Length: 183
Image (cartoon, rainbow, N blue to C red; front, side, top):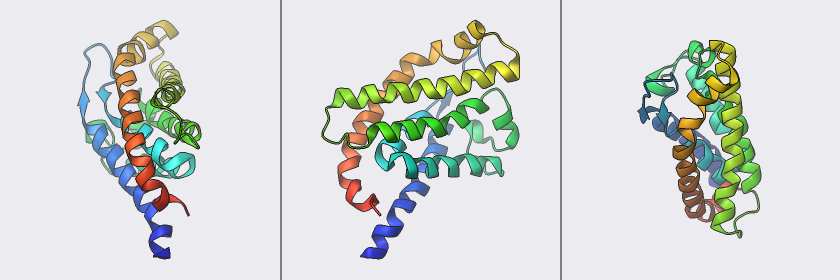
């Protein structure tokens, strides 16, 4: 039984890396921006909320490294360092600080209400937007206003819905998984 408790959290890390890859493929391209709508952030936020900052970071880092070495895990089954260097690469890299922040804010919050769970997702959303928008500006030469119009504004409503969904999923998963993920 002790072996299961040591291994199981890392199995969850692998499962969350796979979930992020699957959610990355659920996408809707937008005609005015190279940034598509996808569900990867939902997976990232649930990962941080369930696994915490350290194991959540491991899961997201595995996802990023898999794509960097050529496994087709990024949007559109893309997998090359070019995806990270392109206009959407900042969002992918932004998953890492976003999952860490979500995990830090989720620690010790099992007894807090659902509203708090939703509110803690907003800074995690902002961190990912900051990384993604900054990198978009660097790679495309777009100004701040243009970048915000292409990278942030159209995504806010959907991402708020993802934060709400992530809070509900985390609330449902944290308690049953918490005893198995502690090492």
